[in-house]
Amino acid sequence: MRKLWVRARERGAAAVEFALVLPILVVILLGVIDFGLAMNAQAITANAAREGARTASLGGTAAESKASAKSATLSLLNTSGSNPTVTVTCREPGGSACPSGYDTDREAGGTVIVTVSYVYTWISPAILGLPGTTTINKTSEMRIE
Image (cartoon, rainbow, N blue to C red; front, side, top):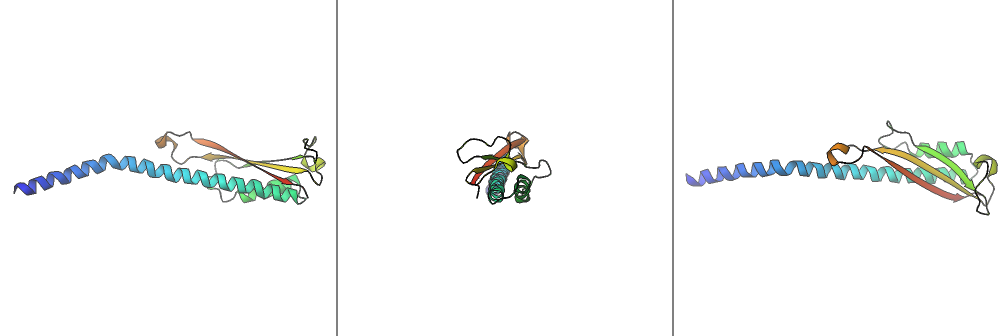
């Protein structure tokens, strides 16, 4: 009879230990998921900048480059909170910045510079003690053909 009493107490201790460890495991799991989604958003933003630069380097206008970059960001999960902003600038073949803008001053041999900014909203900032948002900035440069 005494062995049964000891086993019942041990089962209760295991339940208490599980109840103490479970919140820590849930926070770690949420952190891993949140960090993975943030890394995914960074990769998508970098790809969007590269796609916009590719469009512009092949003779597209700034508007076409921006549209191309924005369409590459459609797979971002949290686009309801923030739409990505795209800027298109250029450098002349000598290395100086284009004075008026990409559409008027671009020339073959120069460099197009596309920057995509996206405000990523964390899923669980309060639980993990993180800020509510993080700005992701990615830049891509390509030679103008």
